[in-house]
Structures are given as structure tokens and as C-alpha cells.
Image (cartoon, rainbow, N blue to C red; front, side, top):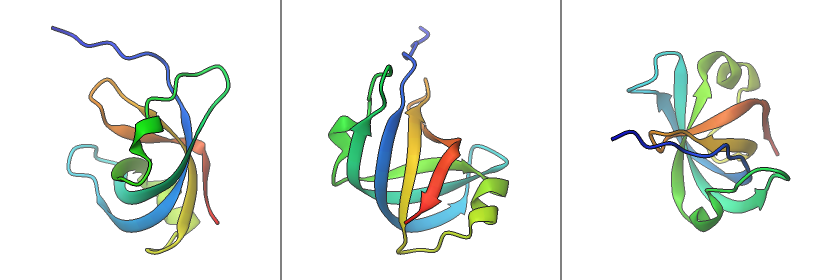
Length: 98
């Protein structure tokens, strides 16, 4: 059975706990983020609203992550979507440190 997921985005802010090369997605870094804030993105469903206070794993393109040089302990501000495999991916134009 195939599970379809609706188009979704959420603006999320949180503390970077850790970052490691993704075990499942070749050119990605998986970052662990303690979610401090989640907001709706107008026109899209927010599938992360219930993740406030949790630690989540977000996949970030490796080249983007390296270009931003975000360190452990920094606050990351990002737009995130959930894929059909329930993995989280950052929007490549919406990631920065605060």
C-alpha cells in the first residue's frame, strides 16, 4: 500500500544538537534539532505542529550545510517539510542561524 502525503511546510526554529552524514540520503547531512517554535506557512498544511519541545532529525543538502557553517548549540531557523517516508527535509532557500 502506498501512502501519499499532502504538500506541507512549517517554519521551525530550534537548537542544533548534532549533525552527521545521512545514513539513507547520500548528499545530505542529518541534523538533530530541539524544536523551540513551529509556525504555519500560509497556504500549506503544518504536519509538525505537535513536535514542539521534541528533538527531530532534519535532512539538509550537504553543500548547503557546509556553506552555512552552523555549529552545535546554535539556533537554526528553517522551513521544513515531511516526505511520504515521514522524513523531514529543509527548504534549500530557508535555512539560517540566529
